[in-house]
Image 1: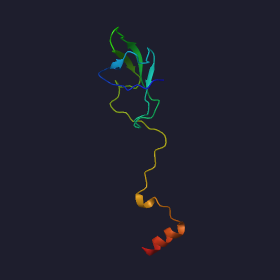
Image 2: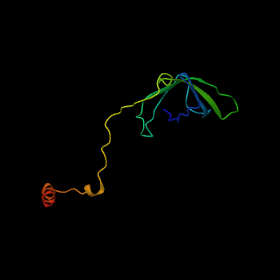
Image 3: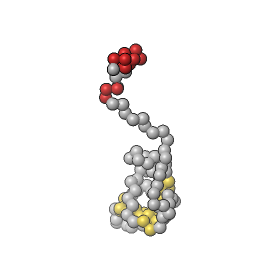
Length: 111
């Protein structure tokens, strides 16, 4: 499984074009492109598009890849992705030291 960064150059209803993909990229017709999760914005494994055509030209280092969108870009204006468990918020610096229940109770009584 290759990790490819998707560059959306233009969107025609449900058709996406990846320009400047290396000719040597390990992508073939019928491959499903999914999110990798590297950016921690989208969880990994969300289907994005399917490769429908690759125009490889001899002597050129890059070639366009034509994709069919699987995520409904032609039908929706907004996208909401709900993922698993969220990360708990970080504790402020003064709360990172662990106090015993007795010390906490004494601090509350003193105030």
